[in-house]
Image (cartoon, rainbow, N blue to C red; front, top):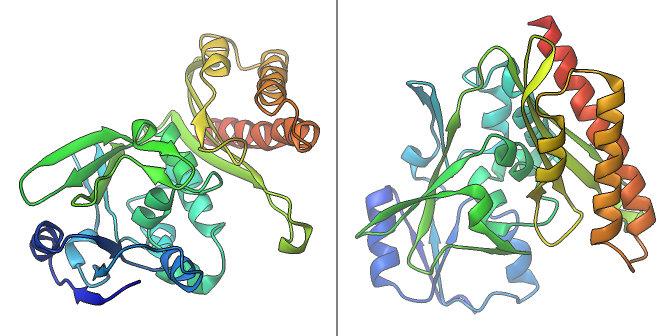
Amino acid sequence: MIEEVYKAKTLEETLKLLDTKSDSMIIAGGTDLIVQMRNKRLQKKNLIDISDVEELKLISEDKGIIKIGACTTFNQIIHNETLNRNLDGLKKAAMSVGSPQIRSRGTIGGNICNNSPSADLILPLLVLDAVVTIQTKSYERKVHLKNLLLDKNKVDIKDNEILTYIEFEKPTKDQIVTFSKLGFRKSLAIAKVSAGVFLDIKDNKFEIVRISLGALSNIARRAYNVEDYLIGKEVKDEYINIAIDMLENNVKKELQGRESAEFKSHAVKGVVESAISECIKLNLRG
């Protein structure tokens, strides 16, 4: 049960509070945390509100590296001009999150730290090979996002640590990031299937391929065997179709014995094919 709430104005103040106030939890947008509080799922005594920490709301670019503060909202991502057409998938993922009210309050840091299997922004960030910064009052560490995600709703962040920034290399003109998902009305109680795709196409060949999948296991993850297959191949339907079939087989094996296995293994084909097709079209447009 929450006993004390502290309002931080700066990152330095936040780090001091985390260092001195044990049993604390960070809140920014609160779109996930408030639900947990209402359901009495929180065991922490102290709440540190960082929604007014302006230095964690910035999106910047320096020497080809894009840096996004953890308190940046989905709407800020959608409307930011630094995130150009090559990052269409990141903006599309942000647009797909919840309602307009949630997009105006929810943050990229919260989306990562909550680590839902179907967290939309995690998918394009995984294919961007994003790195996150974790800080305390006494040290800072950088971790690849793929290594931060431990299990459903669990991340490699200690009680006295806070995720402050997300960084990735800005895609070049030949590199495109896309996002696709299959969603359903809540009344159907069926989880969506989602995917992020990063393609670098040169001379009509796949030079770099990264594919991430969501809502298929406890955490979002990359499809490394499919990526390896496509690298070096010509951009032809025959190779793409083989890759899509490989994904279907991967999902069937992973979900073997579950009622959703047949549906999700089939659905993932359409979702990934859509993202790959969009990547190729955007690449051709230059």
